[in-house]
Length: 237
Image (cartoon, rainbow, N blue to C red; front, side):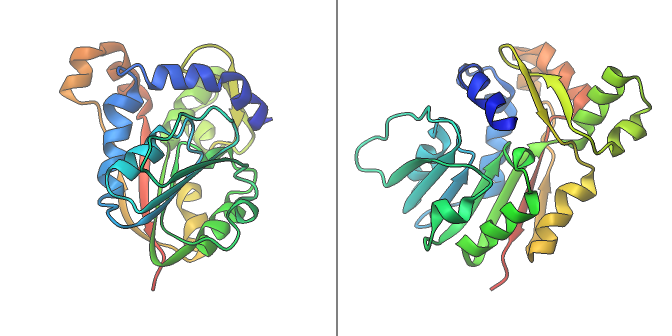
């Protein structure tokens, strides 16, 4: 099960992410900030918030209130004076965790692919966002798993790209494996459109000169696997 995977390897993931030389620190997090934009005075919902570090960062950037939800209870301490609440909860039931609360921004960074029912999750997000609210989704680039699956299963790249059965692969941090569905480009966008969201922006961060200097191995991995893709959607007013 996905939740069991994450319970087992969450500590390894956070340790690598916090190292300062991870892809998240060098490429993904700056791109995520860029796509989310200014959160001053806004209420932010962070789904799959991990340790809660990014939720706290948004509060430091002027968000009025931030709620983070993650299935693993491994949260950092909240600095005094910040309106940040970190809750243990499953993506497969956000509506129950949030209740009647409403937000201006919802972010799902590298977690949406682990939802049992992505359409149900996005419907829940639609319900908790105010009119005009923003949804930002960062997820593994579809090419990443197409490349990995093609090699692992010995199938053509396009066949691996279209495969719709769960894929198990070694975690790119620490030890262990992760299992979840893989997606085509269309499958990463259509559920949000079906929920009523309007697509505003797509960002596909590429290796930077800094990454190539600091971590040639990670840059080479991105050259082959693409890395992540980030979508910004809007709930119409």
